[in-house]
Length: 454
Image (cartoon, rainbow, N blue to C red; front, side, top):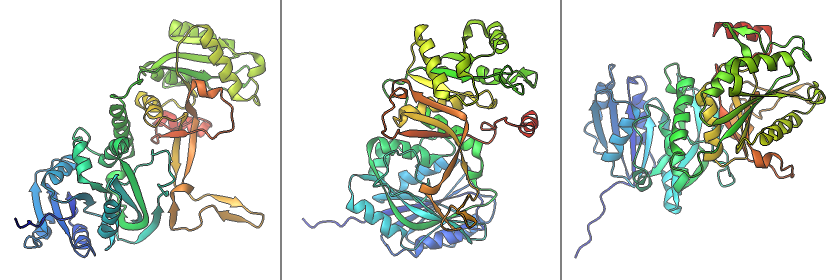
């Protein structure tokens, strides 16, 4: 019997578009000029009101292109439409405002062809402005050396083995954004990932970019992480929350009981902790009688009150000694907990899902510790004896290993048993990125005025 050749393409690229008529032509052309010719291109217009349909229809006679016009159904629905229609062995999304290097499909598919255990491969990329001018080159880690997979690939321009994507059940349509983060979390549970340290696509930054909606993105990520650990064992572990407070007896300028919108500042943190289901107990450690008496009267048995020893309350005393004192006290009270949550009263706008995210991340990535951070986009300098010198080697080169994070309010969650282990081995530390409001820390009069406004 004569063998019938497989007519399916090696790669399916699909472009999702909603009112990006100004950019989509460039995206389409960047696929059509690929050095790899064995591909199909699905273009999904998601209810555009501009001239996108007219531009897409110019390509309707191209045999490689499958145009789809639908009512506005959202990104994740469009992803699943493309997955069902695709015939390629590998599949990749390209957003309509971005474009590919001409060798992208060839290089990424070759990586997957040579590594059958790899489910997803992704490249470095250029960030460009609205006009297409390069802002910076974003270089990812060498993922052959990465051990903590908590920094996901870009949702677009990651090439995925379609068999793996189907085994995961495709995209979860409950989430209207962060489809790439969802797939990343699912992929790393069951398959290997790989990267190519070459910039193979151009990622456009502009005012209407979805990635600008930080609070929505981070909230969606936290929900994805929460759902991802629901099927795991031992996800009912509890945390002891410790709030160390010196108070006005040691620091006359202390604002711990100062009222923000008619509520004492420390109560903002405590009230959010009380909404967090996996916090087994809240413990406030302070040498200040006024604070302790106030909290005891207000919260009664909801909050554990610990009179901190005077020798632990000094300005220069190591905080870990206070934490050990508090942990030992909680043990004597026969409180069972697996994690210790260190918090500050100076971050009043933390949300309960932010706090839950710490607990979910420490379990999802099996870290020793998780800290709360903000990613810093500013340029940082060091003085080398001659003058200031930029820490970055290039103004347009952004190395992932050089990315800087700012710790927020001493926020950290750690495993109780490993806290006492002071061996020299490096701890495996994860992170929770907090949005701008959640990360607001009150350390000055100006910070207080901003807090009153927001």
